[in-house]
Length: 178
Image (cartoon, rainbow, N blue to C red; front, side, top):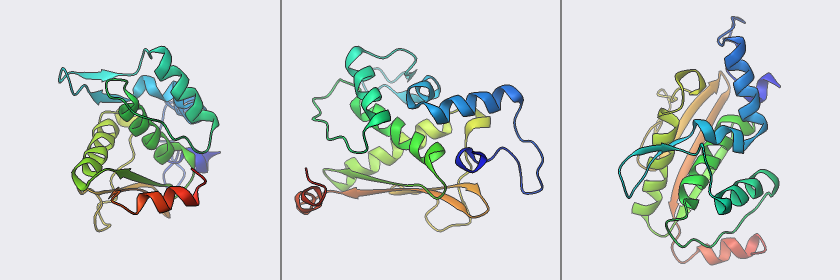
């Protein structure tokens, strides 16, 4: 279990978190929906920093699917908060899913793909300090417009990579049965 949550102790076994913080990490690891109360995003319409402490019914249904389904293809229409939820989910996978987790982001072009990395970076850096993983600054590309590397342990680097989808995306989706 500690491997999944990572960061409960340092390399010589000293406790890094209070009992309350450890309990919150356990709850966040067990539930993406619970984690959302800590996730902050910049509302692109108002410019205000917000959290997902209250979800609209459609967002709640989407978040519930994210917790149970291995693959979701969602049609986006804008103003639904799906991009922010997707980025929150990617961060949750990165932080809690498994050691050396990798998240791949695909968007319509390079600029949009870089924006997704920016949304994830923003949310990760606005988590409570005790919940954050440090950037793996010794690794090339630790924090760039297209890539993030986070250190969760001595042999555990969590990675986000973004891609411009381009015309080849149809072939990739066909391989997944979409």
